Amino acid sequence: MQTFPAAWEMVIFTFFGKIFTFIYRKDTVIELTYGTIARRVLC
Image 1 (cartoon, rainbow, N blue to C red):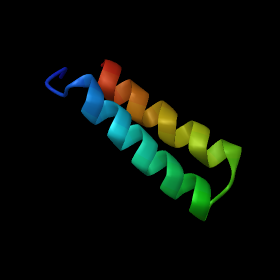
Image 2 (image 1 turned 60 degrees about the vertical axis):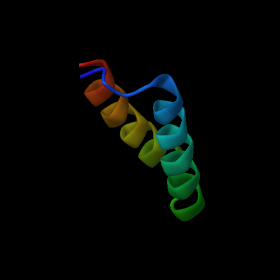
Image 3 (image 1 turned 90 degrees about the horizontal axis):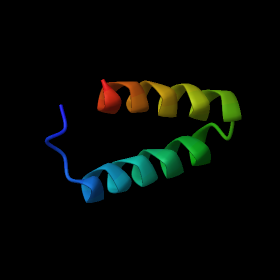
């Protein structure tokens, strides 16, 4: 579903990215989260 503008995707990625990095600070958690988001956005 590509109804989101590119700007919103960047905002969401940056927002969640900062939160997860601040809370967990683990590359594995960030990779899993970004992977799940990317799959939902692309598929």
